[in-house]
Length: 404
Ligand code: GP9
Ligand code: MN
Image 1 (cartoon, helix red, strand yellow):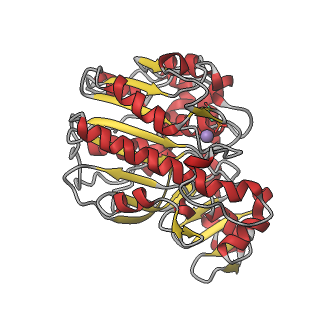
Image 2 (image 1 turned 30 degrees about the vertical axis):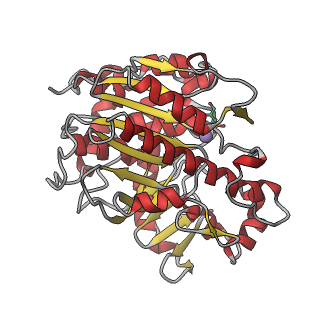
Image 3 (image 1 turned 180 degrees about the horizontal axis):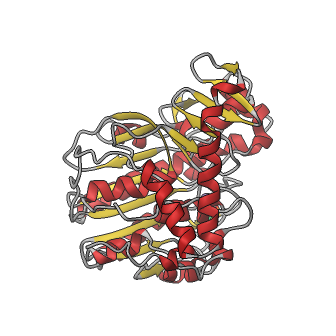
């Protein structure tokens, strides 16, 4: 009901961070390009396998970008679609099922809709079937102008592998679509090659696989390396088409690629046992925000996908005061470092809570549960309030939110 939404709003207002002026509006009016990097986890960044870099391009890009060193995915069973939901709405996905399927006819006030109000042309590019994850329905509901699906790409045996069109081909063909778009545009490109089971043709393996008893983990590395190359080519093509200077480019991982099923092999790679404490940290995905002309910096705030929308709106100079959102601007100095994973595990500046145990990040060991307790209510409230919004379709009562 309306009262319910008012209660949730009252709660959220207390939690709104400052209004830091730092970087506010720095990207105003620029194209906003999101790259959803399939299954790319943060542990590959700056790392090597068999002595070879896994993400040479991203490593170089980070040097003149804002790179968030501790950023978590918050997805559940809805995988990629959950990450899209988090980023567009700054709400939590559901604990079970995929909200893209179960609540596609809800009222939302999504990122594409907001950008549309600011005269952006908005589109998603993804060379898969348009109805996968119910995207065609949900994208309409979230206000995208256009969804480029597999029907908009030329796909054949030679240029595809595994799930479909190879990332390099996808990037090249996507640029052809982008040059046709009115500007400013907001696009999201969703890569696909680095998807389980990480299949790759021999000539696309730019680095050698890992050697362990997990074929999945072994093949993960060359597959990530391939996606890194595709992103590099995308940047080259952006520059050639004169789209680079007027764009903000954001690269993030959608969710983990290596499940806990492969913990043994992962432990061999990392050189340490994958305990529940390490496993939570393996839920980190890269977040790189590249703004041409700015040098950027490394940022160690503890953030999650739910925070990306407020962060982007901040950079674009779009005020977000009356929005019903659970994330906050990652550039804010006095934001609370707290990330809540969908299973109820959470991460603060100093602690990790998972499986009913509290761990100290500094000491890398279990500590008294009371150290984590101060966060319990907030974690519970946030997940519950977000769920109530979705189950009750509460945003339909929120007609005061549309500012400007
Ligand atoms: C499919 C792609 C991969 O279109 O998004 O889906 P996933 O299994 O990662 O959710
Ligand atoms: Mn995915």
